[in-house]
Length: 158
Image (cartoon, rainbow, N blue to C red; front, side, top):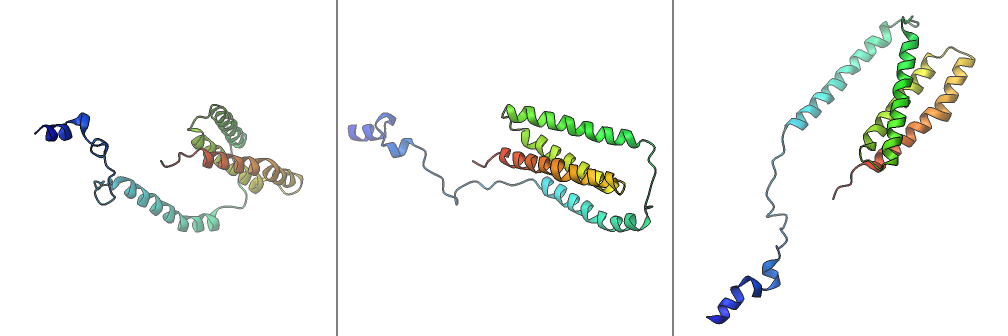
């Protein structure tokens, strides 16, 4: 009787009984995942694929040249967004804030878009050379740096 009390009392129980035993993969509860993210993903894939025919319509119907009423505002707006994104990413990187992965990807995207539109809308000659030089020497390397920063800042699985 006394022996059974000693072995069943928590203070005298063997260490294996007091520690939680590891759960095998067969005993783990099955988590049901929501179908919402996969449905959203399918909608996004469908939207992207639906744009492919539209690209052919645009390529064949848009005029070779166009006049934009607010051309300076478009470029100043894009460069303002780039500046804000660069500063925000820089601040978050210096603070080691995990949200830097988001701003770094936004910054990389804006820089890539700027390089693309600079090169594709530049007039032939000196403007074209300047646009290509800025894209190759400044915008694309900065975009690549931001992608690296974003990838390094991604949360790691435990």
